[in-house]
Image 1: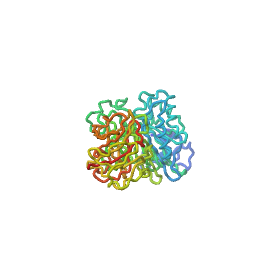
Image 2 (image 1 turned 135 degrees about the vertical axis):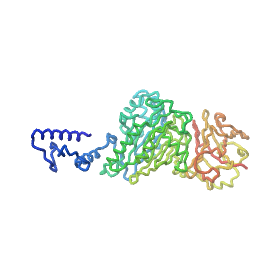
Image 3 (image 1 turned 45 degrees about the horizontal axis):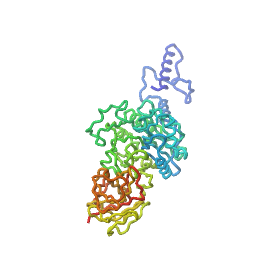
Image 4 (image 1 turned 45 degrees about the vertical axis):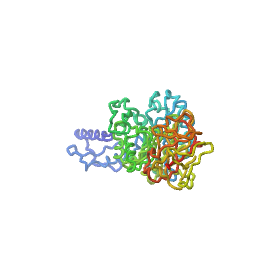
Amino acid sequence: MNMKLKITAALLLAACLLSSCGSEPLKETLPETAPAADVPAAAPVSEPVTDAETPAAEENESAEDENILPEALQNQKHTLRFDENGEFRVLVFGDVQAGPPAPSDRTLAGIEIVTSREDPDLVLFAGDNSLSCTTQTVLRNYLTAMTGYLEENQIPWAHVYGNHDDENAMSREKQQVVYEEFPYCMSQAGPEDIKGVGNYVIPVYSSDESRTDPVFSVWGLDSGGYITDKGMPGKQASLPNSMYPGLKGSPYAYMPFTQIRWYYNTSEEIEAYAGHKVPGMMFFHIPLQEFHEIWMNQEQTGTEGTKQDPVCAGPLNSGMFTAMIERDDIKAVVCGHDHINDYAGEFCGIKLCYASNIGYDTYHDEAMMGGRMFVVHEDDPDEIETYMSYVSGVNLKDLASATETVTDFENAESFTLTDNAQASEGGADGSKAVTIAREGGVTLTQPLRLGGGRYIRFWADIPANSWLASVSLVSSSGDRYTAQLEDTEINCLAEGETEWKKLRNIGELPSGFRGLLAVSSGSLKGGRIDLNKDVPVMGYYFTCDGSVTVDNVQMMSSYKK
């Protein structure tokens, strides 16, 4: 019973007592504009009020409640709106994951490069933002560097926490105080009676300022840390032979019921206030198990992108995805956590998207460094466009803009190397080769057939104490084919030598290798095109844990005689 109903009941009781003492009976009807002190009319005590006889005043009370801005939408530092073109742009960065005093210059440069290119209205950091920040001063200095470009250019930003943020560091509660000091930080600590720190909603309003209802919403949730954390069931929940095959023995947390209930109830409150469902996107750090489902069903879910990490979701599925389906307002979910995954697909009407990491201070794929963009249109906010935007400038949407054409591909009898490459023209296993890519990428005038025992052959100049982790080809349709070299047989021909050597994997390659490497095209995984079909190759990628300069790398295709 709300406060108004309690007051009404008390007044009715007082009226009955006055009547029994011979006082003048209350008026049976109220004037149309009764003063606040007037007592509302009541039915006789012997005749209970039925649903059909409920006073209209109660309906007005309900309507008034619906016009109160939901608590979750209050206390926003800035009012975010669609621009004059009816567009709202969100950029998500995964795992900066560096320690004090600040992220590396390469990481800061990457944030600036992608942000300036994509011109977002809101930037999100998807967890594992920092490592080992043990005092508020240390964290404040770290965040000043990490968000410097955003604060300087007055770009609103927000964050959620990952499993590493509070390891050997301050609690999330203490960190949150520092985050909220920044003028353009939109994050909020969120309700204290639910699990986690940083559960909040950011409303996005119409470009028409006369409208007061939110058109879109951005939800941030704290996905926790580990299954052994306080309130979690412990190691007993992490079984070696789980029905969830994404990561056997997963140690990570799951989304607890208090968060699911808060999302569900808050979503209903926002709908009641707006008078319509408000579509939105949600971001958190640790992926849901459904991220594994879309990768295993790429054709059915339209999944595209690269998967080099297992899907490291928690071992228990608490039903967060089901709650989203039932509420039918979340249209996209994005997470980080698995640094070298950047794929996205759609399942049950919800886009599930990875943002590969932006942090160069942790493990990464040089070619995948960047952020994931979301573009929302005011006239149709249910349909969200999303794509990866890489630091390198390569964007799978417009890869052709950075390419050159190689002519007469099929009839070429030999390959061309850079001037400083001295190698035999003989290919691995007696193959011939032709150049299919140089720095900046390539477009073939005729498609390349990847299967049939062919080889992908490339020139590499690998710095000492570095190792080449993978090599990929990208088709004109955006499919990427990747050979993971740590578990792939590889052939090498060092500069100045004439005989190829077969290695079990890249780990057997001498430090500081310079020369030709070749892998069977059958070792390329991923993509949705049969490797034995013709594939127009538009670009290539290398991954290294050190730095392989693109200027010193050249890609070739080999085929057997």
